[in-house]
Amino acid sequence: MPSDELTRIPRARVGSLEFSVLPLSEAVPLLLALGASAPAHGIAVHFCNAYNVALADSDSAYRGLINSGALVFSDGTPVVWAGRRLHPSLADRWTRVYGPDVMTGVLAGSTSAGPRHYLLGGTPETLELLQQQIAARWPLTVIVGAESPPFRVESDAEIRSRDARIRDSGATLVWVGLGTPKQDHEVHRLATALPVVALAVGAAFDFIAGTVSQAPVWMQRSGLEWSYRLAQEPRRLTKRYLWGNPRFVASVARQRVAGPKTG
Image (cartoon, rainbow, N blue to C red; front, side, top):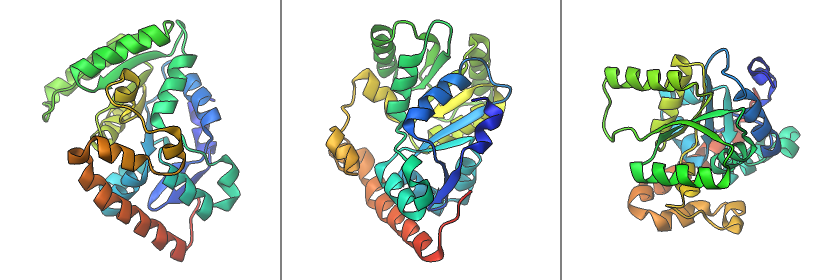
């Protein structure tokens, strides 16, 4: 599917975010097609869960940034449940399009002819393990660059230098794993600055590298993945879930009362 046809994908609102309604089985081939050659202009791809909806509910600038993305996928099971309930006409095609599943699927479908992948995020150790896993599991995949940005605010010169490295690498897909919401801002910036498909995939780097374990499938399907991750990283994630989950529920409840809007 050419990039100019992305607007044909239906979008529907959950909370204040407008999600692209496309099943996982079609999302992976779409991204492979988009990454087959450098797009004419940058394409921002966001994977949003209940926490993203909660953030958007409280921050209009963040809401606008996400909704301006070319693709906004339903990364969390509760988002899928809410979307199907709010928009029954789209329920059959509204599936979870989980960042780690998408990244795995796209890497598995890649060949030496493309896409050309750039990895941006994670610690240097995680990034090294990630590249080792990719080389072992998907040896035809072409990785043209990988870097772990510093854990501080970067200067304009540093950002320009990194953009130049990405451009010179010939990358067509840039996977960004910097954590929410930082990665969403970076994906938006990259898509504005460079002719690449930039994807905010969160914990996918850690999961594929094997540095963090994924929740069992039954927990993912039952909407309990957040509790598994909270048990793994309580210091980092407690505030996110204790604040974000109730805010998500409240946002969806308000929408139920007001009535859904489909984009």
